[in-house]
Image (cartoon, rainbow, N blue to C red; front, top):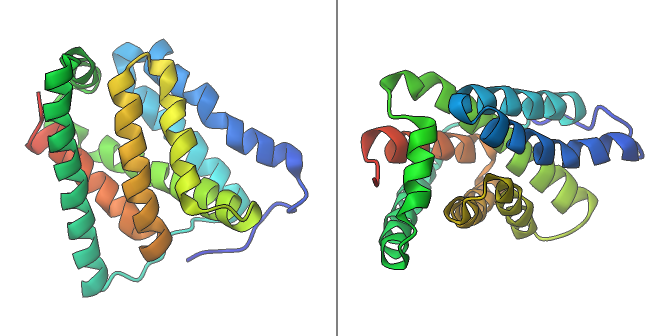
Amino acid sequence: MEEGCRVRPGDKGFTLTYIIAPWLLWPFAFILLSEHFITGMTIATAILGGLTLWKFGLLLDRKLDRRKLLVIIVYTIILFLAFAGGDKLVDILGLNQGVTQVYRSVGRSPMLILPLAWIGVWEEVYWRGGLQEKIIVERLGLPWVYSAIPYSLVHISTGNPVLVAAALVVGIVLGHEAHHYGITASSITHVSWLYLVLILIPFS
């Protein structure tokens, strides 16, 4: 269940640290631990999740009814189809190396099921929960869609333009879902989409 802020609203130092954290953690995972990317992202998202838990609580809504399950299915399909179309565009533009780089870093082992679930959930708790809903929407009074910008730009450190563009799409789709249907819904969609594109129906 959502809980109130556990750190004083005026704690600008903590808020600044909270916002800057992924800009340090993404190069750690994508560059320093590139050969152990999943391990790096597991650590990075654990830190982001921990910061969010400390500052805002878990932010997950435990209510999961039939309507929300339908929403999750629809958003998962939308995200998958967006990437299917994006894959065709990448092919036309000759940027296939960017897609290959992602799959090479992640791998395609069934053993990815647990770490991908971990990464997907904690990314949503931080990016769409803490950053989007608590800081951008509630504190700054800005539209939720602004959260897709830092989520996309933080991937610049990877040097992979395909990943930057892909993150923008993910940020918009999951940001919309989280804002209207909750972090639990966007978390399940995120994990389901990861399973689809990385394990079940890879694009490359």
